[in-house]
Image (cartoon, rainbow, N blue to C red; front, side, top):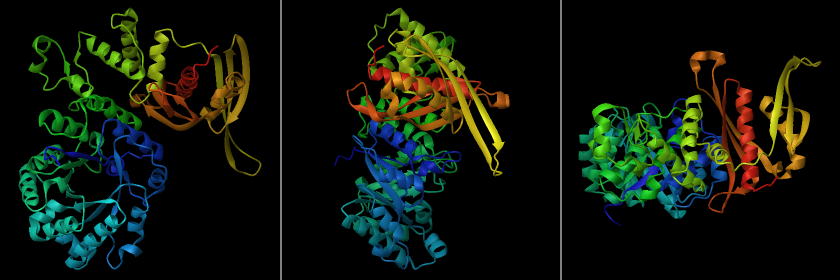
Length: 539
């Protein structure tokens, strides 16, 4: 194994779920795991089997990955139980993942007070659990909880715990700065000492950001010999978050020269991946985020612009394109044009950079983004926007009007019920149709009414279902009159061909309006049209 190889372990789906305001659905986990796989992450920690229904549903139907490997998270066996009779450990061993990550105590204070057991018993719990994982032909990772606090108080015992894990067969012993209180110089000194006992290519680092040093601590640990880094996309995590992989990844590769198993082409997807994760979770992306923020390579006026135009290295420490970002000079649209062209290549659109329609499309995207559209995470709507401007989308149907009524009342049994009714007027093949449908909520009623008209003409839409629906308030200062952004994920039981010739089962579309029903209609319409276009349905 090369000493220059550093492995990336992502904890977004488990540790990141502890972020205040973040609540993953199993579908969110599927989408994000595919994003992580696309950028070449080595290990993806999917969650904690048995801890909640979401994680159980995810592990029961793990999506296939191209490069990454899944890991499941849990605890070492409990005191007083054998590995065979510990329900938590057996739940871990029962999932179909090649790696198992187990957390255990390494701080004598926690062993004495929190667990209330003999210190030797804690070491036996670690040893037995690691051996049990190895006996099931899986790789074991031992997460040494509060390792740095324990090392400072009692280095002999902390080292005894991780040495026991390593000698029992752990592939990785991960040193955790659980409360984020350790500083870089301490991390480097302690990890250096650990790597003198345990080979660095078996040592990992997991830092929290409570002193805003998680990234620096992680890099210090790598310098000291650790060869696995753990962190979360966009720094998600409890309290102040985990070490931010979006910053760590390009720093290790572009600045420090390590082999992280991520190619230059995969690294170019980093900005897009960061924004998709935020959009998926309904969070605003940090404009000032290193490498991937919209302001990371922005230059405004005066000497800065002049210097950058002569030599970008004056104010740019890496090429924006290397991480999938773009240079933005306020007085120029070149950044927008380059970004649009890159997205075109991804979706299979071949356009001459000198095509005058490209300039109009750049302006249109900017106008839409000003209105509140965000096309990161809504690739289907972006593709339709582009192809409409290029004149490639047929007029499959046209909505003349729609009306949605909600009826909230008490029935004769005294139960409170709410029923939605939608009326739509559509033009299909030059013929006007009007229909009415009821549904469980206004969006469901509107969807049902649209399908009543469209299915006889386009039966291929039969297999579509709405798998996720997210609403975000864009102007919270406007109260109930705020502009809303709706993102819909549509799943197709039959799938659709993607641009590489394979089949995808789901896609995302977006709608923006001060009226949430109007925004929902825009996203629904795009979803239906995207299916028809990809299936090459003719009029």
